[in-house]
Image 1: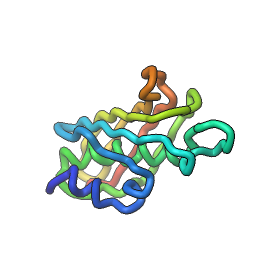
Image 2: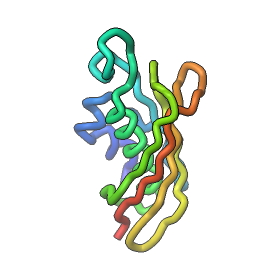
Image 3: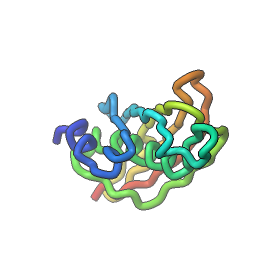
Length: 128
């Protein structure tokens, strides 16, 4: 399975402009260019929580897909928002557990401008 092509062809991720930039051996990275359409604040670019969540979910799924070589539907995801995402964002994900039925991935989301950690998440995905 061509993991990068799979995620490039994901309509919702494409709509938001999410790009998976690295994906191998249980690790994935991705980025998102911030725009007015993705902001919750009309006076200042500030990522809507759903945008940050979708970046984390997409990159988390990519990390697991790199190991199981098949799509992995999200079962559950928990996210803690730690700071405002006021510009471009990037995410890094690491697989914590790869099971026959379920996989677990930790994801950190950062502000690209200064590497501020803006959210951390843990995703649970169906692997079997």
